[in-house]
Length: 171
Image 1 (cartoon, one colour):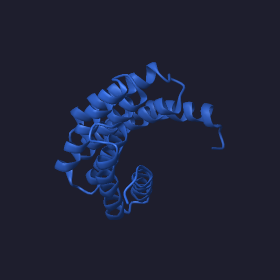
Image 2 (cartoon, rainbow, N blue to C red; image 1 turned 60 degrees about the horizontal axis):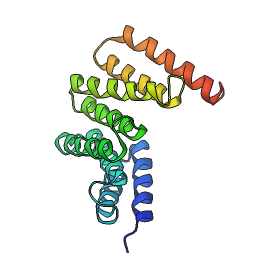
Image 3 (tube, rainbow, N blue to C red; image 1 turned 180 degrees about the vertical axis):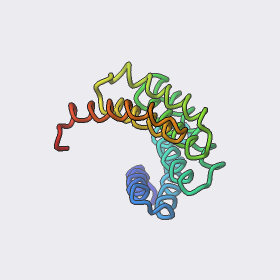
């Protein structure tokens, strides 16, 4: 029987496989999570959108760009509507959208989304939060891919500084 707990557990397992670069297993778990989430939570629910974004990131890494972009765009729309355009969930959605666009070879679209995510995170939770540091890191990755290494280094240094202050030097 399908349940919300099963959908969320498959989501976590899929994200783990993605981090371990087991993309086929990740995609399989994330597709199942999304299918169950749609049934249990509904199409326009934040949990369903989170599964969509996670699947989109894995698909983009696997080279399945058309489906990835479609999913992450839908997920971003859903998360912004369900949680508010200035919410942490919206910031996560724009971050995911930027990363998918970057993976798909669309740096201008990636920049718009990553800057939007960073702006939301700068306002809340603030410039000294680890989520803002993550936005800085993702923007630095974009700059590196654009060949703008000199613009990337200060962003990475700032990200490291924030993370050290928040998590400690040994973390």
